[in-house]
Length: 574
Figure 1 (cartoon, rainbow, N blue to C red):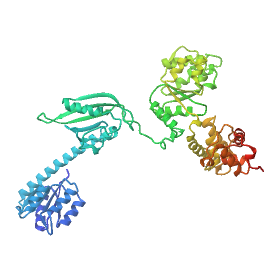
Figure 2 (figure 1 turned 45 degrees about the horizontal axis):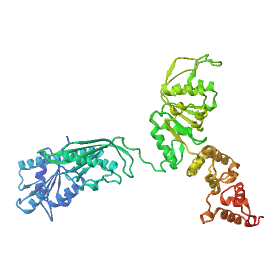
Figure 3 (figure 1 turned 90 degrees about the vertical axis):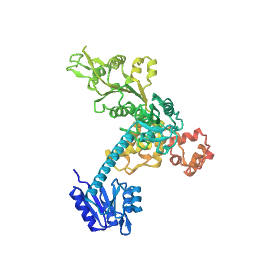
Figure 4 (figure 1 turned 120 degrees about the vertical axis):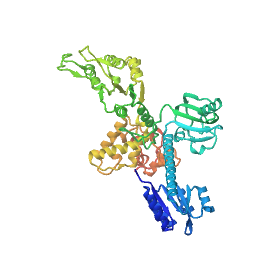
C-alpha cells in the first residue's frame, strides 16, 4: 500500500527534524521545506496528502500556502503550526479552510492524532470526488436527456444529452424551463408541470417531436417529483428518451462527394445516399429505375456492401443477356438430364446468393414464365431447380433494376403487376446526368484520376471550352457516355489538357446542346446579341464564334437560322 506523503514547512530546523522523525516513525513519507518559497515550489512539483506549515514564515505566512493549495484545487488538508494559538491569523486561517492548527511545543501524541485525522479527512474528500466524478460521467454519458428542476420549474442541473436532443444548454441553469427551439410544442415541459402539480410520476410515450431546424424524432418522456425525508416536495426530474435512437451523423456535401463507388454531390444524389443507407440493413426488395448508364449496378453494390450482410455473396444476373430457358437455369439451377446439354447438376444464382443479395439487372426483359417463378421466390422464399421437384429454401434479398417504364409494360401486358409491386417495396429512381449537371466537374475529376492510372498519363483536366461543352451536352448515355468520352480523349490527347479537338465528334457536332450562359450574356446581352457579338469578335468566322460561345459549329449555324440573324447583321466573312 502506498505510504501517505506529508510536507512540513517551517523555518526552524529543529521543528522540521522533530516532525520528520515522529511522522516517519509512524510510517509516513515526509518531505521538509525551510521557507514559504521552498514549500510553494514543493507543492507545485509534487502531490502531498497533508501539509504542515508554520503560520509565520519570515516575511510570509501559512495563509500563502493555504491560498496556493486552494488555487490548485488540491484536497490536501493544511495544518498550521503556531507559537501563539490565540492570534487572529490562526483563527482566520481555519476560517478560510485550514484543517486545524497545532500549538508549539508540539507533542508527539497530538501531532500523530492530527495527522491521522487529516489523512482520514483527505480520504473522505477523495472518495466523494471520485463518487461525484463517476456520477458526472454517468450523468453526462447517458443517452437520455436528464433535467432537474425546482418547484418553480427553474433548472438546477441538466446533462449533455439535453443540448444534443432538446436544445437545452447550460445557460438555462437558474432560469425557468421553456421550449428552447422554435416550433417545439413543449410536451415534455407539460409533463414536468403535471408531475409537480399532481405530486406523482407522469409518462408520455412515443410522440413525434419535430421542432424547426431539428431532425424529426419519436420521443418518450418520464417526469417524476422528488421529496425530502420529511415528505416535502423539493424538486422534479425529467427524463426524455429518443426512441428512434441517435440520428445518423449529418454530412456536408463535401463529405458526400462519394458513396461507395458512386460519385456525385448534387442534392438529388444526397437523397439517394441517405435512402441507400436506410435500406442497407433492411432485408426488403428494392427496385432501381433510371436510364441506361446512370449507375444502377453501382447503387445495388452500395446498398449490399453498406449493410451488415456486406460480407455475404452479391450475385449479379443480366436478365437481358440470356434466353428464357438459359435464364431459368441460371437463376434456379438444373439437374443432370433436365434438358439437352444438361450433362451435370448446376447450382442456380439464387442458391449461390443465399444469405446475401441477388441483383437482377434489366428485370423488364424477362419472360412471363420466368416472372411467375420469380414471384414465387419472392413470396415463399423457395424454388425448384429445372427438372427437379424438390423445393430449395433460400434467404436472399432481391435488388432489381430496369431502364424500362414498368407501369407502361403492365398496361401492355408485358409485365406482371403483382411481381412489380413485390419488387418495388422501395423504388429508387436514379436521375439522368442532364438533371444533375453540377456533378459533371466532380465526375470529370474522378475519371481523369482513373484514366491517368490506366494509361500512365498525367493529364490535369479539361480546357475551359471542353468543360463548357461537357456542361451543355445532353449526355443521352449518362455517366457511362461521359466516361467513354474521357477515355476517348485520353487516347488522342498528347498534352496535359484535354481540348475540344480530343473529344468524340458527336459531342462537338451535337445539335441537342443548348447555348450555355456566356460572358457576353453575363453583360446583359440577349442570345441574338451574344451570337452577333461573338461573330464580330471572330471576324465572321462561325467556327471561332462557336468556340467563343462554347457551342458547336452545327449549333451556331442552327441558331443563326432559328434566330433569323440576317446577313447584314453578320460581319463580313473572310
